[in-house]
Length: 206
Ligand code: GRF
Image (cartoon, rainbow, N blue to C red):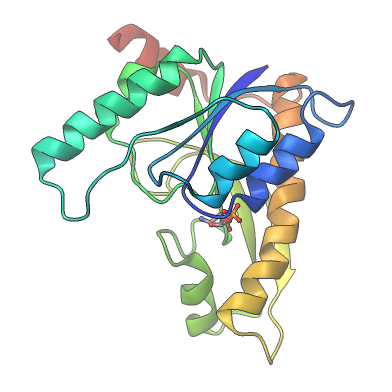
């Protein structure tokens, strides 16, 4: 299965994919890694692994019209690398409905909380602030909402009394890497299935 991965930060989840792609653990080929943050750690990891990279930056406070153009530019870059699935992992921008429609292949996202609880950019901090004793991570298919798409896999992580957001996030990320690799391998092997109607909607609209 060919995948493109989008990242915005350090790319430690991406590293797990780079380390296992093409092995018996993960039957996928990473055709490119893209980002909205030129030079970010994730892009450097991809370059070190010999995987093609691209950046499509978006200025802070960009207008709605600029955002729409950015979505189209990003979509065109992703499509150039011909993925069967797009993976967003630590990619901190929201993809528009038009992006999903134009892309025409399913998008998979990782989230550092047990959805549907604590969606959005601060899932770890919000769970900690709420005082939950168990949180975790979710791998889900992306739809037009924010972290609302069908859930594919989840793993639980216990919150410790002395946790801060950083220590909790580190333990969640250990599970997140394992879960992402296992979920993509299950998808590649046909052991789990994506919601057909989300992909078909995309295909028909092209
Ligand atoms: C992950 O926990 C991801 O779910 C969240 O940001 C983190 C990315 O970390 N949105 P990294 O860039 O893979 O190290």
